[in-house]
Structure formats: structure tokens, C-alpha cells
Length: 312
Image 1 (cartoon, rainbow, N blue to C red):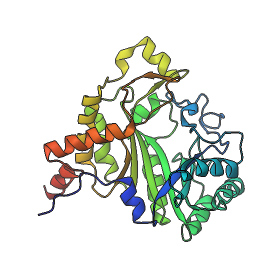
Image 2 (image 1 turned 180 degrees about the horizontal axis):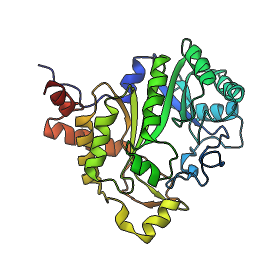
Image 3 (image 1 turned 180 degrees about the vertical axis):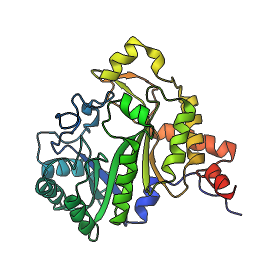
């Protein structure tokens, strides 16, 4: 009897929708955020410093076309036949007029070799006219809308100044699904006030939502953020992880996660000059290997406990 896969990977998810090798090109399109410009709040989320999103290729003062072309040159040296997804990453990439958003998306799609879009945004920034456009667009190219949920606990969302609640997140995912759009979620593990059991429970909650992909990463304390000051004043507000204890948390999370949800990543790496903690000294691929080793050594896999609960 063949053993089940350890977890559903993001490349396997992409392979179901696109042919050949595909790479995301991260873009900064100059968007802002309703939690920064005063329409909902000011100062942004307590952990946020968007300088951590800048890739090693492209410059933020370049046009979308120039950023895409720089990114393609960066990757094409090694993979000349690669296809590309334009990844609108920094800030809230649906937070502008619908016409402006469409113009930027179409500019990216016009670059040779680009086969689709990944759009990072907030669950409270999905106007119906833009969803009309994305629904139609998804009939001709790949479209994935990635929502920053960060937590499923309202008490945490209030504490980090997120300016939306979990009900908003759930509603947004249902709205995307009703349009036939692929949806992703971003979740931070280790936010202030959350216990390991709270973090594991996120997997239970998200498994009940119409979700295609998920990005996980450890809480990173970044210079110049409100969170950095809060932790300097009171380090006890966060649960400290070592690489090994974080791996254990991830294994428990995967066991409770619905098995068809593709996991894009487990950790994130902020630039060393911005990062305060944790500095684990591990590349993403090395951390992924540790998670896979732990799953294999324990005979576990994504959805193991989710399947048990369905049967009970």
C-alpha cells in the first residue's frame, strides 16, 4: 500500500493548473493600505515593515514592466524556459480604483512569458467590480488571490491593529470561491498572546473554509515596528520558539490541516539588517527539510488528525 504524501506542496498545486516550471516575480506596484492611509487606521499592523518584501531584483521606482523584466532576467539565466507569475506582493494590491488595478495587472500580463497573477491583499479590500474583472480574467490566465488573514482569533486581530475580524476573512474566501477564483491565505504563527494550542486551532478553523493554498511563517520581530517596542517592554507577550519546537508546532498544524490545501511555505526570512528575532540561521529549504524529516520519522502526514475527526 502506497504511503500518503507528507503534505500537499505548492509546486504540485501549480502543476494542476499550469504546464512546466513556473516562478513568481514579486512586485511593488506602489499600493498603500487602508490601515495606513487613515481610511481604517494609521500606522499599519503592529508587526509590519514592508521593506521586508523587497526582492533582490527590481527597484520600487521602476514600472511594473521593468520590475517583471528584471525578475525574469534574474531567473532566466538558470531556467531559460521558465514561465512566470506576476506576484503583486507589497501592501494591499487591490486597494486603488478598479481601473488603476486593472491597468497594472494587464501591464504585467503583457510581459512575454507571464502566464498569470498572484495578488496579495486584505479580506476587506475586494470590491465587486474588481471581482467581476478577476472572474473573467481567470478564464484566460491563472489567477490566485492571496489574503492576509494572519490569525483566526479576533482578540489577536485587535491586538495587532489588523482592523478587520475573522468573519470578514471567512466571508472574503466564500466570495472568491463563488466567483470560481483560487484563494490563498497568509498566517503568522506566534503572534502576541497566542498559545501553541491557539496556533494549532487555526488549522481547524481554516480547514472549514474554501481555501486552496496557505503560507505559514514564524512571527518575526522587525526593527522600527510597534511590535518591536512592545516586546522590548514586555518579552512575555510572545511564545518563544526554537527551530525544533517550531517544527513540532508545524507538524501538529499539518496534521490538523485539510489535506487538499497546498502549503506554500513554513518560514520566512527578513533581511538581516531589519531582523531582531528570531535569527535561526536556517534557509527556507533547510527548514522545509526538517519538517519533512519530522513527518517521516513520526509516520505522520498532512490531514492525519483532520481525517480522524471526520470519521469520529
